Length: 268
Image (cartoon, rainbow, N blue to C red; front, side, top):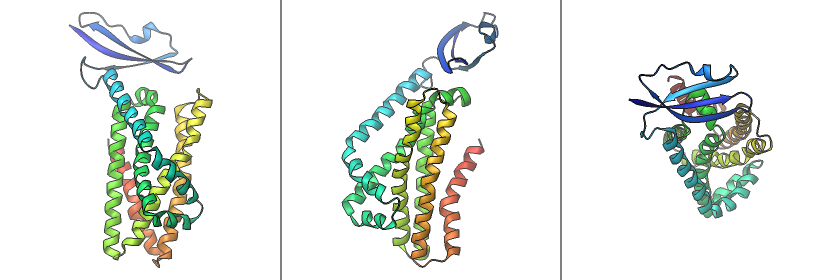
């Protein structure tokens, strides 16, 4: 009786992962894997049954198909992307440009389409950049990480959408919170543009660790998020809501969804 194991080998000199399938007999005496390599080589084994859809090869094939589908989607809606990017960039430093974008119905609809693409972009980007890190550090297949990330993004959007609807119903004011929601879409698209430095660094300096790249990405996103918080404050105060109400909004809509998701992740 043979058992198939998938072996991941980390070479400390080249910082690369070597992935191989090995077959071992249950009657054989299995020596420690460290006896085959020097002490500088780190090893990790994951047992996978042959033919299961969760095997590394099947996972990589499906992941490649999903990533290809994303780029096909990007090409298909390239016209919308080209039209929307200049408008949202102009809105970054001037609040009135947000209003101008919303006043143009066709451009606003195109922005909503680009927002969906932007929401898909980050899980795909992180999966491509940190696939080896996810396997070696957390033993998570890239496909599993991508699907889990997409699920969390959808849950986060649904929760925020529900909270915006509740606020609109309680205050009987649909305009203010609809505008704040749409401005959030604009800043999500802007955050995609600000993520490009992390990609360029990865190409210019291939040896840089995934940990540093992710930190650069997070800092870039936080910069855009601060602008979004400021814009939300300006709009809510301009519509004659009190500062106390804004603090309640900040806790309920901005911090609560993040806290719930983080708590869910840390509970496992």
